[in-house]
Length: 214
Image (cartoon, rainbow, N blue to C red):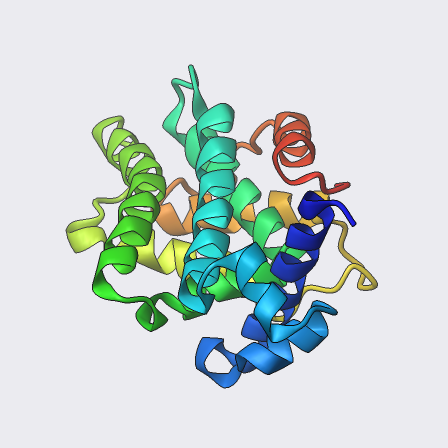
């Protein structure tokens, strides 16, 4: 069996188990059984369990950061920029609910060195949100974001779709992204009828970055 396919199987099993039980609730034997490997073989494909967790988190944040940068490059309007960030974040958390749950919930499971690496990547991503909010404030279309409270609240709101969204429900991922973009812009102070971001651009980026149909 190809190394890449086995490695992918280990990653998928780890994401599923970490999301369901938490990092500390998953043992090596259980992970090996889920990946259809022996415990000894498992280490060949993942390194340590902590390194596997860190790699999963890094990859997810890298995808989020890449998507966000692609979506906002050369965008001048802060409302358009923030709307795209919100739409992408909500869609990613709905489509990749288990993976994003691991990122959102398991940071404390990492040792300080690995945690700093992940936090640096997370801060780079959140920095794009902070930049859009600051530009909107300077342009007079957003309220001031004192101490980053608005940014944190908006990220929590958009991340929350991972806990309830179902593709069998009434909303498509595109509709979900559009509605969360509107909610985000209103909460930031854009007024009752903020402009809708370029959802076709967002859909293209999600398909490219995550391989998800929207």
